[in-house]
Image (cartoon, rainbow, N blue to C red; front, side, top):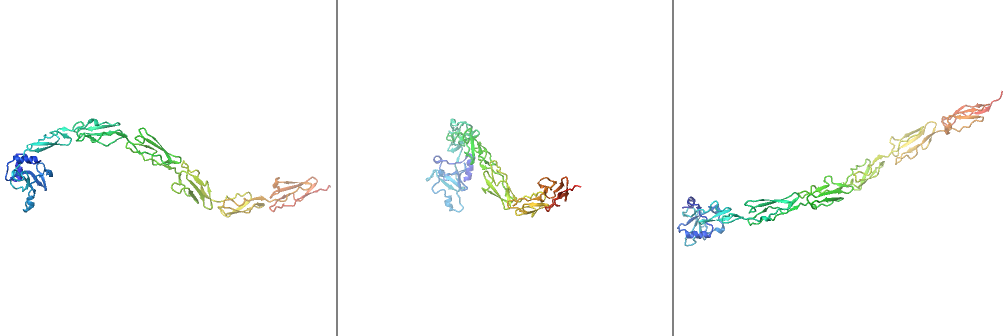
Length: 470
């Protein structure tokens, strides 16, 4: 039979063509089988250029090879064109190299070497059944042992301990604490496992890990901020789960507005917010003065912060109204109201009675001037012209107008004098004085005189003369 026919015959009447496992099987076959001139086909063939056991579909390993000398040679390295030797024969009771293998053309005719399977579906419970000559053996899966791989390796259950502040849950695949049992540990909130796990029972009967412990979650250590202080409360441990740290700032400083002043250590091992910092409080920004200048100690973005001082000045022709220096206080307010610059100007003269004045400009800025005169009958007391100085003050006192004075009148001899105003102004402009004579006398001249704007009386002073008896 050729190789294909031989295999089909084996599969029909037995299980398949023989697959040889070791030298003991070769020795058994060599002693038991009769000699055949054409030798025997065995269940190995070249598939995709790889020698393969057809019954198990496993590749031939180097340890299992049993080639005759200079074999396989594929028809003496294809000396005959088109010849391909992809099947294998086994020499039985050959004078030389009995039991060895040789590659042959699959269409050659040889005797089929078949086997009947000894392995059943339940021959090996947890392993692979390997056919041997007239028998079988079990190759157990790791973690199992016994003739039929019926026993499972077990680990010491006492080595599984429940951690404080935690728990354990074991999954048993092949029995309590047997091979492939997996124990997973967990911790209460705020605690974490010392090792990640899980703990597994290995094929050697040992646990892959020791039982972990639950350790208190730790957050990163904090430090007081510059220009501030920190106070922490640690109910379980320093900088650990449930620790709370409160941050405060020195006078004139405040916590960064975007950050909280209270930090809590969470179960994740992180603080619930970034560590805050203290920044100087900011007073409102000062704008440049109209017609003036602002100068601060620090010209950076901190120039309006706590403790900073700003000074003010005005350009020539203007004066500062308010304080010249302000300081940013701890309440974020300037120590004084912000001053302003106003144009320097003299006050409009407040002229007295009978005063006539005229100024050079409507706005009485420095170098402006005002001239003064008096109404008729009055004379100027003071400067005729005054000038506005650079400090906004007049260079002279505002003048006044005083009524002109006529010469003082005396009572006539044997007469009397009476004026409208009996004060010191009785001889001044527009004042009227009357004369009269004693009995036996008559008035010679005008009875009344008026003080004129020329500072002279309107009439000569009268006199009294005696009256002759009749």
